[in-house]
Amino acid sequence: MVGRALEHKFEGKHSSRDNWRVVVLAQVPIMKDWFYITYEKDPVLYIYQILDDYTEGNIHIIPEITPVEVKSDVDRDILTGQCVQFIRSDGSKKISKVVYQVLAKPSVYFIKFDCDVHIYVYNLMEKIRKGEIHKVWGTWMGNL
Image (cartoon, rainbow, N blue to C red):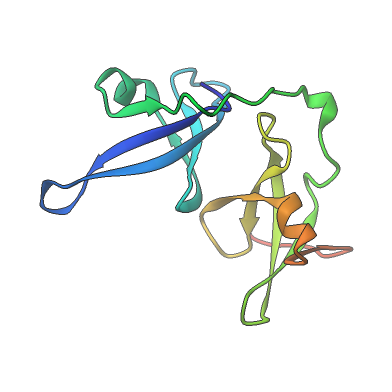
């Protein structure tokens, strides 16, 4: 399942069925039935038991997208543990810390913003190429 794109059906308002595209990022190390996932429309990191919804028919593997190759910890990028600065569309800046590189998708990282309880999932290499992120040297982030 790791590296696969899925379609996840949710029951929405007024019993409507909404389909969301999911990417399975990794298996949670200690809880083998749980997976780190993110939704295409929502870059927040979620931990979810996708196998339950799969057996109930609420999750379908998207067949035309092949899984990516999972790389070992040896191939880790030097960005993990570094502080980076996000530049918002209004020009304001926000400091964050790179907390994890997704082995199934090496350009994707978990990002923790200061004073925010969520962990976000971003294609960091794409944002660096676009100039939306800069590495911050010598910055200390509190409350992580």
